[in-house]
Length: 119
Image: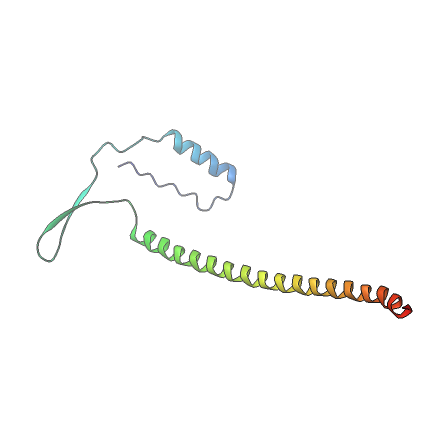
């Protein structure tokens, strides 16, 4: 009774979309005055259970579940990539430290060797 379908799927103009949202927001009737819908679900043994019906579409819930699984896989892949990049950076820094230490030792030997040979 409170639902109005508005088709603006073909509209790409952001101004028109915002105007339509503002128009519909002004006409918002508020919360639905009737009591919530209650459905009785009977199990195989005939025992009745009362359940409140939520407005969630089962297809939406399935899609949401799939998106959560995809998000977890993406986070895992991002972590793996970050770990590999970290290893490469660590290797590169180790090589750099080794080169600097070797260069310092080489320079020290070049400076000390003439002094040692004079003795």
